Image (cartoon, rainbow, N blue to C red; front, side):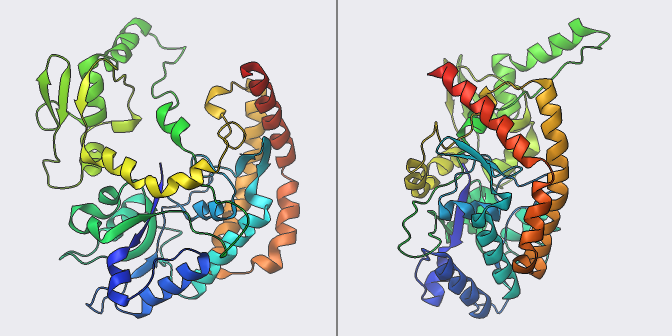
Length: 374
C-alpha cells in the first residue's frame, strides 16, 4: 500500500499541529519553507512526489490527494480510470481532479514544491528525501512505501505516517484511498516465453527454475548467505542489510525483488525483514479511508478481467492520445498555472480522444465480470 508522510519533528520544532485538511497542510508547508525547521538555515522542500511519466500516473504521486474528495483509486491512478459505486469513470475531466491540480499549482506558486518535481528521476526523488547527512532532513510532506525506504535509516524516525486529509473541514463526502492490494498480491506476468523461441524446452527449464522453493525466496530477497539465512529444512530468515542501508534498498539492489517470477510456498516459514512490518503498521492511519470503500463497487478488478485483443488494441490507441494531452497539461498547470482559463478547451480535447468509448468498454467488462461472480 502507498503511504503518506509528514516530518513530525519539524512540526514539533515549529510548534505546529498535525494538518487535517488541504488548507492546514498548505499553512504547514509554508511554515516549513519559512521557519527553518532543521535549525541549520538550510533550504528545504516542503512537498515532493515521485516522477510522473508521460504514460500516466503511478505510485507515490500527488494524485493520491483525490482520495480527500472521496474518489477511489487503484494502483496510483494510471490513465485516470476509476470505479465508484459500480460506475466506471475517468477523473481526467472530473472537477475533483481540477481541484487537485489547482491546489498543487497554488503550492508551486508559493514555492513549496521542488523545482525538479516534474523532471527528476526516481533515484533523485529517493535521494533528496534522505537528506544531506548528519541527521538533517530535506522533505516535509511526501508519499512512499515505508519510512525507512523513503527516508533511509538515519532520519526515517523523524517522520510519521498519516491518514487521508480532508479537502475541507467538515466535508460530507467520506475520504478514500488507493486500493493497491490486488496488484501487489496478484501481480501480472513477470516472465514470458516467445511463441517463436527456437529452444522452448531449454527456455522453459530456466523459467521453471525460478519457481523452485529456494530459488524463489532468493529472487525476492537475495542470496542465501549475505541476504538470507537458512534456519531449517523449510525455514529462512531475511537478514538485515549488509551495507547498512534500509531493507528495501538492500533488496532492490541485490536481486530481482518484486519484479522476478517466484512462488513463496505457504508451507515454509520466513522471518521477514522489518520493512514489511513497517508497511503493515503504517497502513493503520489509512484504514478508515479504505473501509469507506466497497471493494466490489469501488475497485476495478482489472487483474481478473480478460479483454479481447481487439478491445485492448482499440483502448490502447485511445489512451496514447489521451495521455499526450493530459500529462502535458498536468505538468503545465502545476508548474505555470492556468487551469481555470484552459479547462473547458482541455475537456473538449479529452472528449475527442474517444475516452467515452473506453469507459463504456471497461463498464461492459466489469458488468459481465460481476454477473459471472454473483
